[in-house]
Length: 450
Image 1 (cartoon, one colour):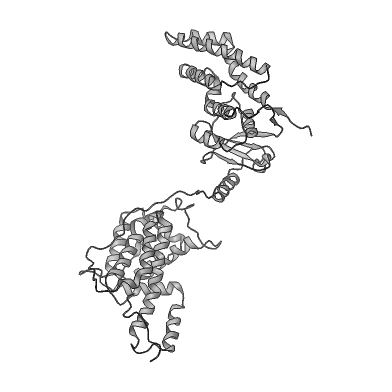
Image 2 (image 1 turned 120 degrees about the vertical axis):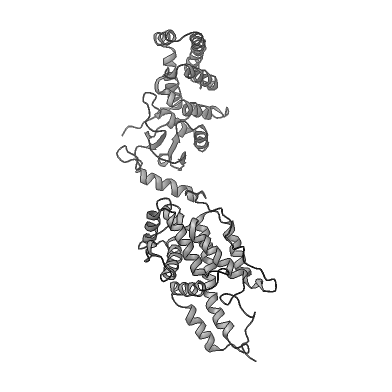
């Protein structure tokens, strides 16, 4: 197969001359001039005179096999022409920002010899409908490299071009087609034999995955942020008792500090679940420790303790919820009444279809339309536990919730933002601030022998 070789100078002047062909077409320039009114026509004529002079300079530099350096002057004059006649240079107007940004990048270092660069790979430029910012996959083998670049976002263009070798810049330049009006605002430059290029069509799913994997390998994030900025919900009716020993909760307090630090909603929920998990096992220990003889804690009691905390996590959570529901929330209602009432208020004013879809995805068996005092314990236990599993687990057989699909299932965000995090905060801070027999130890140590 014949090796394709094109010099950097050939590419440089091929594109530059395409622009000056408009300027050197005297009949076309005169027709345009005749279509303009005073004083715009005089301004246009002055610009043409200056550009014709530059055209002569460009031709002289090409003859000498040198790169013409004054591209900023050309760019400024062309921009002024486009302000008067947006269509004078045809479809070049779509490439103006990208084209001159490439030229400036090529010529910004006077010490680099551009004439020795030859382009012998076959790259193709494709329009691409992709919601990604500019991206350059840099490979030691240039034929494996590819580029996503904007046509008009100059900051995006500069950000990408700063990563690119001079040789690759010439490949971009070569493939710009000023004769066509692009239908998309993004281009992909890729070798014709790259597997991501399937029969001259870019495989969007494949290229998305490559870009995402490359970005996360560089320490970048690819997901949309789903923030939660509200302060913790803590009842104002709670009374602090400074005679109580809050230091027994130091570990939990630091977890709550980490909870406050989290800005994204799923990370925040997992921190809250850590606290709930601590409490559900702690409540079992409290029953045994606080109910044991102060004189001695026996081996049999240790065995009973391990039996109770070694069961299924959902059962442990359900048992913890049972101990909470009948406890007083304030002087007038218990926690069950408070939590069911909050659910009714939330569900009556939210997008019920989205919430139902979310609950079905994680296999909550209680219908959100039928929540009552009798089934609420089962409902809230399943919701808290199954939601945690959907975030933590990534099994093929289970639904996995992540920032990558949270937007697809907005019901989860509604549940977390408008109900679940708030009520879990209320439970946690009630149990921490107001002494109770659920998670508070009566003593700091156990007697194992006399």
